[in-house]
Image (cartoon, rainbow, N blue to C red; front, top):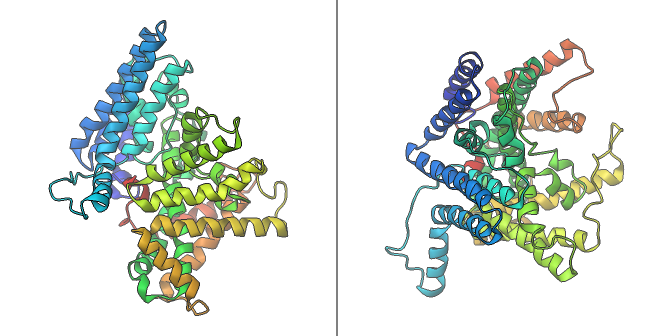
Length: 479
């Protein structure tokens, strides 16, 4: 079920009313209701994959209990934890990576012949997200950061909570699970905040991302016929497409969760206003980058080791991050590219230089800050070309055409009317996010008049209905 669909527009208010007015008297019943509606939400794509998420949930739930039982025998607890990690990653590997490894092996040793070797199974929606979420639970229980829950309904609600089930944020058990263990009360302020953030997410997805997608798909599918200027413009539009698409989903998920008295972590924090790559990765897909930091980078030694190991650790997490995104060499190269960009900063000790908000306390950035943001955006956009390409060969061909031109030509525009939508939508996105860069949601106006607020809300709503589309799925559903 898509957030930007008629089905969800019907589903959400029904679930909301039942949640607060029918099942609110009993916490366990309310949690059970969450599990049921979450499974309906997830099964809307393919009910067969419900068995998969149920199995993943059951394994991690049982692992938590066994780890706690063997607390006095660390060897057994460690074995249980490792076994749960292996089982979950094996499931993820079979569904997501098996055909990739077989194809790569066949290309190297079998002349590309894969007859009878491929599974050709459909990738379950959101499997990378809920697998990592379930793993965080058993790992945190093993580390002693979390007491295991003995309420299986609470745990299943934690893994399958429908707003963030298929594209995050990847929640930690330490944050989300306790919220299902305590009674929840509806707060009007949270409801208003939630609806406001849903509106902003729908604008980013349906007006910005989906309209950018039209141009991006046309250009990338026929890249051989376009000039360097057109390809570069398409790359810039893809940067805004993937941001509007993914952060839009996160906004809708966070806003929807607030309607149910649940607070999710922030997943994006105006990443295109970053002054270097390190700051970008602190602001982009925060739930994934912090997951790899806490469960991979720090256990490997983090930055508290030799320079050689710091280099190794940096490449490990970026390569894993790339590989997490999909079974394609383009994602791995994209990860390696960002590792190379990140490496000088971490070796020089400048990776934590920019931890505050750009131009904090000022209306405009300085000339230096503007140059830094533009350079960072350019470097990130170059990486998005690799990410968006279907193969390494295609990405190299696109780079070749961009570099060799013809570059100083007017970019191809199929429809001036369509382009006008983006000429209006992108500045609106940037202006509102810049003005609200210190807020979780940029259209949360605190010190402004009611008329001004409702003019913005009405304008965004009109833009969604007039220029938005419901035909596009979310990019990160494939991950």
